[in-house]
Image (cartoon, rainbow, N blue to C red):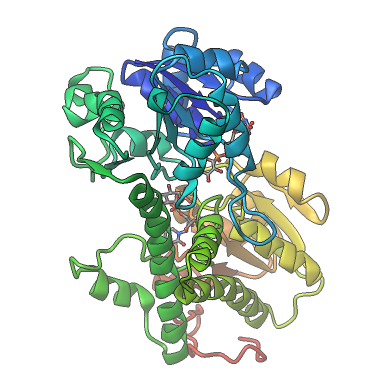
Length: 470
Ligand code: UDX
Ligand code: UDX
């Protein structure tokens, strides 16, 4: 099928490349000339596993790039809108890009077409897109608007797209649903997975994935509700971690105890410095505001967001209690991306913490395996960018672990010990076992677990922030 994808960002580019891998003919439209040139020259503007392979395989064949939206729409049976929906000052989703694309599409409805919302949008958006296109003189029986939300995690977006837990299609009639069933048929009939050149299957996936057809409104709500629930799960375990710190319990043990309940499950129960990224913070605010517009005060989401903010404040207090004073202290920082496996720093808790510690007068040496370039545009002074974790740790008064990159969980500890001025580690992502760190001579702080020091296996858990530790 001929498909147009409008917006070649984190979602549009992955969707376009994966639709091409399913066998469709895809034109990827973007209004950013620089981005288009980069893509046409074979560059890959985002850090995603398997994306380079897919772009290499399909560029110029099943996947072309264009800035001509009208031509792309005229030629396509389905048009996926994947442009940005950034938060406004008030926290609502800014749908102006979606509206301008919908308006432009109206002029090219030459035959029956399905316009599909791929970007995360508030409920009712599909109604608005339909109104906009009707107002711009498209015949009502010549198009339908569907919702097909994405559940892609950055860093694993290609695998998440080709091995989804489910495919959600929000379509208000069967004619429209049939087009989306056809688009995803290689996944739902399992034929994609039989191919020799299929992207490798991740361990947890069930194939073929179910395709769930709902109304457009329900599909729009599924996306917001999914992200809000996942963020709530993270804030919940972060709140439990704070209680563990107060009583000297171990949150990792609590996670094991609750995560083995099949109704809870072990995933998304990793306590840390809080969630970030271009989705959770934005989607919670958008969900909160659209609920309010519909007359429901979703106060639970306020608490999820408050706990998330609080998590960073608690971490700064933990660094202060480890060092007594912060002004002038040299801190090694591992991780700037909002999570491991990506170069994205949008709403990154690591970046927010570095900015806060700079405010406190700390000197920062930071290392991130992928996000350095993007971070340099934001952290323009006060931060030395190191080329390795050990360089970041050199002569530091403490080492902070802020992003859960796998490579940070397997550091050469004796080498690290020799690099640090003081062997103090404050781990915001619980990458190590406290006893192991004490055994290697570190004073080790983490989230929701007692601090440990080389001379005494456990330091008293609830060290009041105003006292410094031995
Ligand atoms: C977007 C939404 O922001 C997010 O809510 C949703 O979950 C997924 O899609 P992302 O892909 O990260 O996320 O957006 P972004 O990285 O901002 O990329 C959007 C692309 O659309 C950019 O390349 C931009 O140049 C392009 N664009 C934007 C257009 O081509 N036309 C426009 O009118 C506006
Ligand atoms: C999320 C959703 O997972 C995905 O389904 C949706 O389409 C987009 O938003 P993403 O934001 O890319 O994906 O990353 P995710 O892996 O969900 O992590 C989000 C944030 O939560 C990161 O900052 C991560 O460090 C944090 N996190 C995640 C935790 O703190 N604890 C966890 O257990 C899991």
